[in-house]
Image 1 (tube, rainbow, N blue to C red):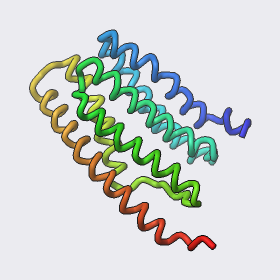
Image 2 (cartoon, one colour):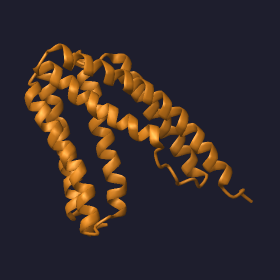
Image 3 (tube, rainbow, N blue to C red):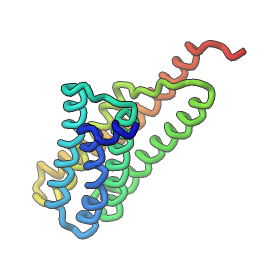
Image 4 (cartoon, one colour):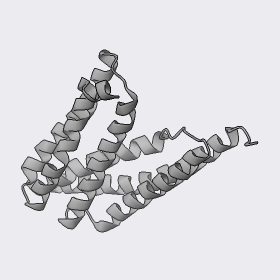
Length: 186
């Protein structure tokens, strides 16, 4: 585990975690252009860590846990700071957090009974893409307040709402299927 910590993909993931407070500080201080640049850099580090892990054959158990944690912390903190700054309405943040909290509680409970398969479904993946795009476009709308950007922001926020609900239902459905496939406890 100690050696895993120092490999390149995990260092890129840690870099993404390092960006989080600075991005949120920039948002709270209304330095939207800087926040946007940092979000883009964080996103590039996310793509790069997976690519490097595959190319250098450096996939690790630590990375399997650390990468989604970094992604969730980044997106969750962005939704919070952007709602607090009136960039994204609170209703979207509440629905995103409610889903994530529900999944976390269900996963923790199911982990205790031996279920270890918590892969996201297609709606969960689409939801993540919508959340990232909504955050980027909402920041862009603060920098370039033109009609097309504001329209794109609203469409993406509607997508976040729809796919957050769809992914929550899909998660419950997939979890039910995975539970039925579990061998019965003796």
